[in-house]
Each structure stands twice: as C-alpha cells, then as structure tokens.
Amino acid sequence: MSQFLKKFGLFCAVLFALTSPAMAQGEDGEDGAGEAKSDAVVLTTIGAGLVVIGAGFGISKLSAAAFESMARQPEVAGDIRGAMIIVAAMVEGAAVIGLVVCMMQ
Image 1 (tube, one colour):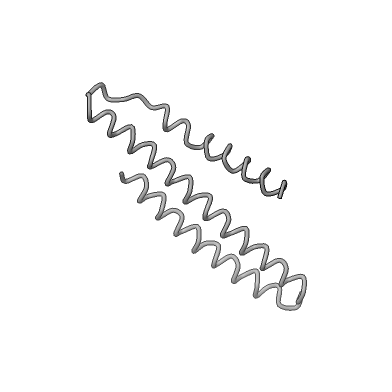
Image 2: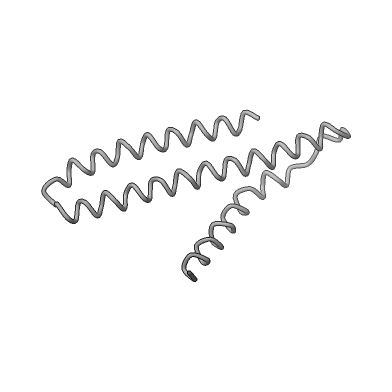
C-alpha cells in the first residue's frame, strides 16, 4: 500500500507541475469574461494532464505485457515488438487528439 501512495503522490506532484504554468496566466482585465476564461484554462490544463497520464499508463501496461510475453516466448519477439509499436502509436495518436480537443476550448 505504501508503494501505491508514493506513486500517487508523485502523480499529483507531476499533475500540479504540468498545470501550474497555465494556471498562472493573467486575466484579460474584464469582469466576467476574464474569470470565465481563467476557469476554462484550469479545466483545459487538467483535462490535458489527464489525457497524457492516461496515455502513459496505457502504453506502460502495453509494454509490460509485451515484454513479459517476449520473455516467455523469445522466438516470436519480433512479431510482438512490431505489434506493440503499432498499438503504442495508436494510443499516442488518441492522446494527441485528446490534447487538441482540450486545447480547442
């Protein structure tokens, strides 16, 4: 359980570090529009951080399973590696699309 708490603490620190520069942006000077824009920036950065973290977890689970299967059957390591690279590229593509959607706000 303590290993999980260490990883979760690191996750929270990284998420805060990634979102803090965007949250530090100044407002426009207008009353309501600046506050609404500031809220949108916070939500956008949190969404982008979650997209990147989700893609990172997905790719790490994919690569862990691929390496484990390569260790069990070394004769098919080339096929597994090729499939792993293709699927990792697809996950990265979905993450980029998610980032674009977050940043369009």
